[in-house]
Amino acid sequence: MSMEQRNSPNEWEELEIEASEPDKDEHLAEPTLELQRRIDLLLKDNFGFRRAAEKVREFPQTPGVYLMKDVSGIVIYVGKAKNLRSRASSYFHAAAAEEIRTAEWIHEIADIDFMVCSSEVDALLTENRLVKDIQPRHNKDLKDDKTFPYLMITTHEDFPRVEVTRTPKDKGAKLYGPFTSAGQLRGALQVMQRIFKFRTCSLDIEETDPRWKWFRPCLLASIQQCTAPCNLRISKADYKRDIKRLQTFLEGGSEKLLIQMKSEMQDASAKLEFEKAARLRDEIRLIENLGDRGDIDVHAQPEVFYVDPKKGMRALQRILKLEKEPRVIEGVDIAHLGGDDTVASLVQFLDGLPFKQGYRRFKIQGVDGVDDFRSIHEVISRRFRRLSDEQDAFPDLLMIDGGKGQLNAALAAFRDQEIEPPFMVSLAKREEEIYLPGDREPIRLGRESFALRLLQYVRDEAHRFAQHYHHILRQKSTFEQQFRKGD
Image 1 (cartoon, rainbow, N blue to C red):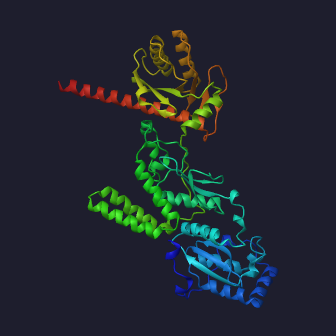
Image 2: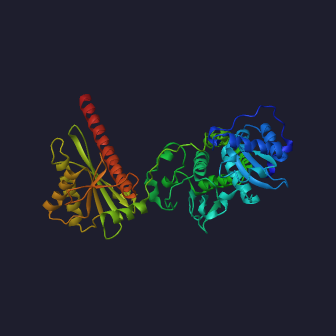
Image 3: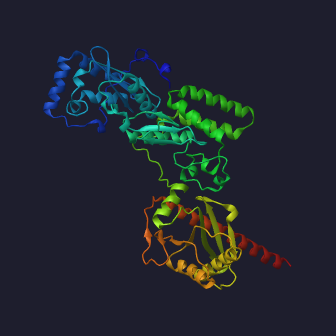
């Protein structure tokens, strides 16, 4: 809601509701006899303080912003609340007389006003705008802007990123803030992400790079909180339109945004674009019901570990002590069902992204029954014998799905073929341990490691491709059996 569209306090109807107790989390000190005496003196001797204390009893129990004023009518403090009456009344209880943030100045309070906001998120944004505009002397938290969080939207990318940062850029970004609480800002960001579905990752995505079509989006895409530009599921123009809507909302234009979106929904419906109209309808409902989206202080986002290709390659170079970043990575996996139709897959990643033209699949020919070691030996022999004979380039890094035994089987294949192997590792799924040739102990990385995430991506893609090929063969075998029975 824009500032121009808000009603002044005088235009609100008075509410005849008994004052409620302040929220439990607002009690920052126990109401001892001494603290209560100090409050009683203020109420007795300070007419302005007493008038403000009586005034808050009529405040609505809705999200909003309250403004403390001195005897001259100057705003000395601005605060936000999810319940205006509860939060504002806490300044007139004993706890406020000892709390370090309020004890020195509550005696200056001579009046108090409020602004109703459409949601707790809107209250957070409105508080930020008012503090910047008014510069109240007791909002000390924002005295040094550089140490406090900003909401930053990049402007130089095909698909702009939205993130919380304490080190804002001087160029190439639109900034909102600073804010006093990083936790509350992150909570508000997560609520807004449900509506506008922007990305918060650090991937460098270019619409003209077709390799992104094969990138695996993170969990946010699956739960409909991101439109997955990393998989090119949304066009550059449509994504930037969503970012423009977010900016309109952040700048206080929620009513203007709703009018615009309702008009777009009607146009889409008239053009029989019912899927687009339905999406706009759902987004409009989310914005209208933003106040019901949960508490931004406790709002939880699913843990999302996205893969950053560039950071993953740099981390692998450092951890594996490679001479250069592994631009070409190949992964090998074996799939079988009860020993029948054992197959192998080989996937290729270029600059950290799947390169489908480099994918290969193998039907294991010389192995009977279930024997992953011999199957790996066969596929490595066939693959690298051909590359060697044709003098094709080897990958910078070869990853085998499995543990130390699978890695040794691959090494044996190179030895038997008398071929110098590329740098090799294996990744054991149970503990996600990385084995290197000649090392007795594996490398164990944290689950958030960019290097581990990239290896997992390669391993999972190799597994998916192997299972897909195995499924094709099983279907073909079933069809042939049914065909023979029909004869």
